[in-house]
Length: 482
Image 1: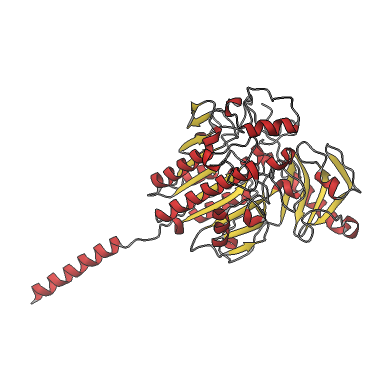
Image 2: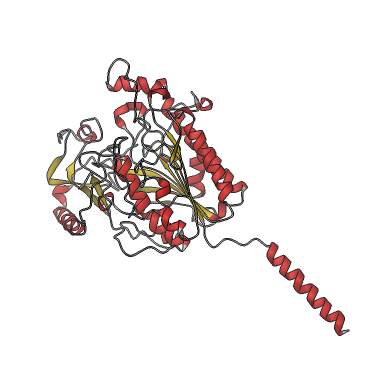
C-alpha cells in the first residue's frame, strides 16, 4: 500500500514539473523597437491629421496604444537629434551640435564620442541583443559607428541620403530644379554607401529599395533575436529628400510622391508589428514610432507638413521640433491620447527602468523616466523643454507657455512666423527678440498670438530657468567641426 502511494506521489510530482515547464511565462525583460523617420512632419500621417496620405498601420498602432501630442526632439536637424535620442542627453553635452556645421558630412572626422553611453550599450550590458538598421549620421568612421556604440550589428547608410552627390542638378540649383531632380529618383546621382557592420557592401545604395530592405532586416533580426531580450533601432532614411519608393509603392497615394514614401513607411511598420504578433512577442515588446525633426519646407509638397504647427526643419518654432509620436505595447500601455510634454531624450531612462538596466550616475541626463505615464499611473516629470539651435538655447517651453529669446527660420526660407504674423518682420538669420516672444502653445499651437505684454512674470521665470540651465553646461570638444 505504501509502495503504491509513494509511486502515485512521484508520478504526480513528475507530471506537475513537466506541466510547469510547458507553461509559458512572461519574460522579465521586455523587448524594445524604436522606429525613427527622417524629416517626417507633425501632420504627415493620418492619425495626426493628414487628409490624403493613408497610414492604416500607424493609425491602428495609435488606437491600440498611445498617441503623444506634445513630443519633442533634442534639435531641429539630423545629427544632434539622433545624438539626443541615443544618449538621453542634450547634444551640447557630447559636442554633437555646432553653429558652424549643423550636421556631420562625408568629410567629417568626428562623431559620437566613445565616452557617451547609448541606449544600446546600456541594454547590451544588461543581457540584450542589439541591432541598428538604417540611417546612422553619428559618424561614419570608427570609433563612431553603431558597432562601436553597443550595437551587435548594423545595416544601413552612414549619413543622409542626399550626401555624396556626384551628378549636377539639371538646369541649375533652384528649389524647383532640386524637386524635379528628386522626382527622377536617380539613385546613381548619389554615391551613398550601404554598410554591414563596419564594411561597405554596396555603393551607390539603390535607394529605391532601402525602406523594403530595412524592413526585411528588421523582421529577420526579430526572428533571430527572439529567444533573448532585444533592442532594435530602425532609423529610416526617408522621407528626407531625395525621395525614393519601391516599385510597388509608385503612384499609390493621393499625396503624390511624398505620400507614396510615407505609405511605404506605414507598410513597413505594419510588417514589423505583424511579425511581433506572429512570433508571440507583441505583449512583451514596446514599439515607439517618431521622427528626428520637422518637415523640410524648402521642398514644398515634397517636404511634408507640420500641420497646424508653425515652422519646420532647421528652426525652433514648434514645427521644427515637435514631432508625431506613437507608443505601442499591447496589454501593458493604457490606450490613450497623451498630452504631457516628453522628448526623445526620455527614452533612454525609460528603457533602462523597464529593463532593469542600471543608469550610471557619472553624468548629467536630460531625460526623464516615462514608465508611470506609459502605464497610466502618473504624470510626466518633465517641467520644461529646451529648444537648442546649434550651441545656443533659442526658446524654452514650460507648461502652457513658450518663450522665444531668439528666432531662426527653418532651412531656406524667411521665417514661417513672418507670414503668420506680418507685424513681426524677421530676417533670414538669428534674431534676438527683446522683449522675447511669448505664446501659449496649448491654446495657440500655431504661435500666432504673442502674449508677452500680458505675462512679463513668465518671461522672467523663463530667464531664470535658462540662467540656471547654462550653469550646468560644461564645454566639450566639438565633434561636428573636426
